[in-house]
Image 1 (cartoon, rainbow, N blue to C red):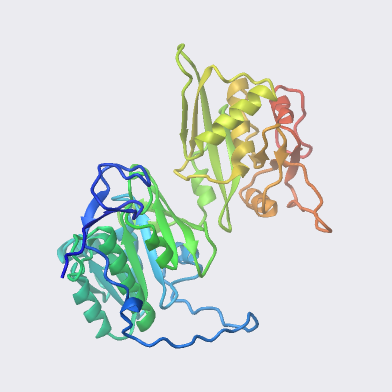
Image 2 (tube, one colour):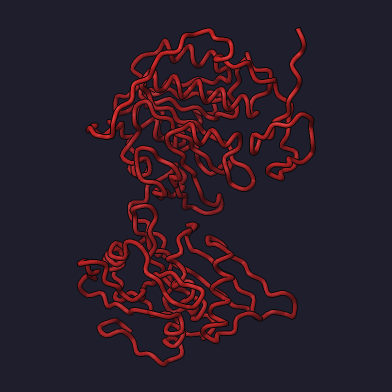
Length: 467
């Protein structure tokens, strides 16, 4: 029998080539190609099983919402859409040391204390290391089924013989190994096959499975992209290890809202939930400093207020520097161009430093107006009104555009004691008109030049706002 030809697979994009190369021609990454065993012949080609006809149904009908198993950690349940769904698969990624194992151990212990059976399988650490972490977190009393193994065949056989399991944690999927695949753990073939077996077993037995995934230097989950399509939910644990805040963000969820966030604070006793992230992000804010503005943002369904900080420094004669933390550097360049061209605010010769305080990463265009306010405040050395929030998208002609869920942003601002909100001009949509909370004055901006004029002293403060 002729030997099957070797194949080489890219660990970043799963592209297959006939020979090894230092750089993948598909995704452009270096040193990601490795040799793997050839794919098995198709089962359909062998004709080993008879096909049967499938039945089609129409769209009419009703179904009850999926049951939920609450983890006992409200912020985690919020991101999941209400808790773990039996038979679902969740993929959790994040930088090394960010707190993935800590979060899952706390959630597993909370479920075990609630009477649920939880299995925690680690392939990266020993049992003694997990026990040391549990002792530090104060969860030693939880009745948790703990094991250290990388042999997936043994893990699957054990889970098939185990009953009444509510949650299975695999830490991590890149360490799992199938002995019938001729490649090392962490390769594309091993990760894909191991994930398929675990997800199939979870749906067959009715338990939830959480797969911990490593991330690349770009922040994406390592391994084949198909892994994110196989699971029901993909969560990213974000944050800086030098900062106490951690953000759990859902980027995919078949049973809930996407882009939902949960906020945690890393303490000596583990991760503590933050029920009101807006108050925490603004706890150290000083309202009398030029270059600072408060943005009324929206993360999933949760309104969040966060401080935008801007600093302009004189350039020594080289290329002006643009340093951005927590926001899109491309949108900063666009805003600088609009302020220069449409509003006459010359910032091109200055070094610009922009920071989102608290470690939160903002992705929505609604932050444009808050960033523009911080830039204008820093350029004119005029502090922003301390009790005012900003939100609105800025177009290339300088117009300020409407954003989604303005009422939720205004309610959050009013709840935290803000007296004014700078926002786009209200446009009637059908018979519905935006209503503002009592005591919150609205400053409607139609063009970015109107905002610059306010800092130049050409516009009066809003009526009823605190000056």
